[in-house]
Image (cartoon, rainbow, N blue to C red; front, top):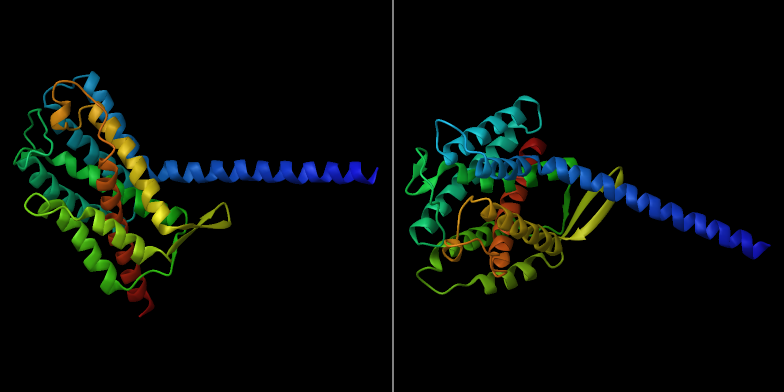
Length: 274
């Protein structure tokens, strides 16, 4: 009898833990979905304009208008703050500069016509990078992110600059991304990200979070190229899967994005403390 009661309570306890885990996973997914709202609109717009031609303007121009309206809508309804808009604008400019250089070097192209093109790059492309910043800023706020064992400002800033510059310099010099990835592991090996889900706190190794975000952005890149957001040289004749080696590029881009957002958050926090 005692064994039966013990088994009953054990099953109840295990079942309760499973239900709580499912509930927490649902809340985490919901917060992630809200944080990805900008990205969802981008993918939906790419898909719709790919199969339903819009009148009066080229497709790339319509995408720019849609993304600008979406940005304004999110600001109007408080889904993004003014500080987040500043960060997103910074990423838009950083991404646009990288796009102009990469298109010039033939890494990829935007084959369709548009009035809003600069040096072969449509202005809407900056929103691809801005959407990463939007996700990071919103997820940071919604999940109440805290960083543990965060490296010194004088280590983080040069590392972020080196990663970003390597996207340019590897066309003229050796590609040092492997060395940079090793350096990232060394610098952030002891760093953790703490986040909150439905009142409970969890933690994850920061390097693992980089890898997960980079992998999902690579998946998003395959979706974007499928809907004609841009195309790589091997996709000119027909769409094909983006090479898995691009994961390392997106991983480094995510790291740069995270370092910039984290640094700005810390600088702002110190200003408020002072």
